[in-house]
Amino acid sequence: MNRSLSLTDELVDYIWQTGVREHPALARCRAETASMPMSIMQISPEQGAFMALLVKLIGAKRTLEIGTFTGYSALAVALALPDDGRVVACDINDAYIDRARSYWRAAGVMEKIEVRLAPAGETLSALAKEAAGKTPFDFAFIDADKTGYDVYYEACLKLVRSGGLIAVDNVLWGGQVADPANRTAETEALRALNRKIRDDDRVDMCLAPLGDGIMLARRR
Image 1: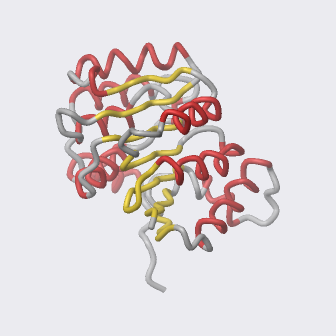
Image 2: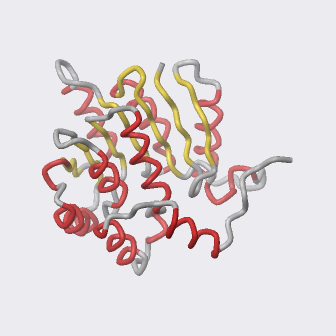
Image 3: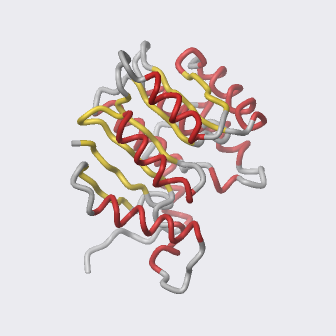
């Protein structure tokens, strides 16, 4: 059966050295975040490079991020955007955002990133009210509390333009989505969303085994 490779530590190291062009501020963000208790929440360098290439391919100028942590994904996307591009970054943790800003500042992209510090549901509702007369988002990245993913997905479908792209992180959940014995709320929420997007005729979709699994949904 043809399938994606299982990645050894040696192969991951090769990918990081050969398959990405990591800005020094991104590398510092990754290295410093690795020592934090919740470091597992950070995306991998190849995910960052993948999303950066996606936003360039679709000509994105306005992007949305739900769940920012220490800022790696927002920085990867901001670096890929044109000078007039903007990221709206949503999070609820002041300490994480303060750390993120140090990397954004070092990379010279502070003016590209607008932080919305509030529960994501509140921010998305506010953005929906502000949407009239504004250019819709070209790209959205969902990487926050898993039980909220369905709400965030539906909100992004309203905020992202036709032809725009929604990327959802952690959809393989360490392989737990394929374990029928795992019935945690997070796992069940991810399973349900994966099935929903598979059957959603509002989008074109692909689930890629990159990082912890990334679901791509292109709004038709």
